Length: 70
Image 1 (cartoon, rainbow, N blue to C red):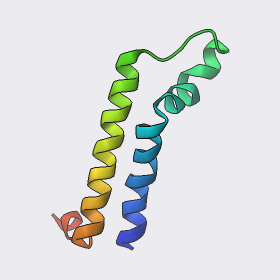
Image 2: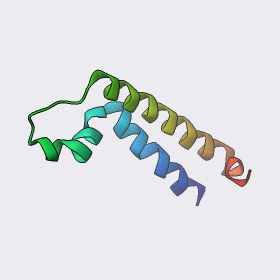
Image 3: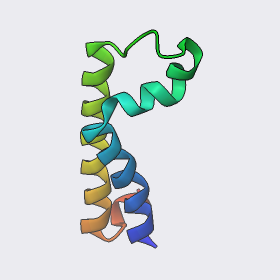
Image 4: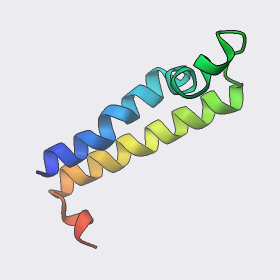
């Protein structure tokens, strides 16, 4: 069970880290029909959030889910 919980954090974290503009295109890109691009601040925050999600997912995986019991 903890493996699947950790995957719920690691997989989106990897997407945010390596493909930061993907989230912007899913949420806002369809509204502007490709006439705009995500800002550098959005890209940076997406990468930071992805890194934090990966860290938390690895923490859950390595502790065996003990951190989820707090």
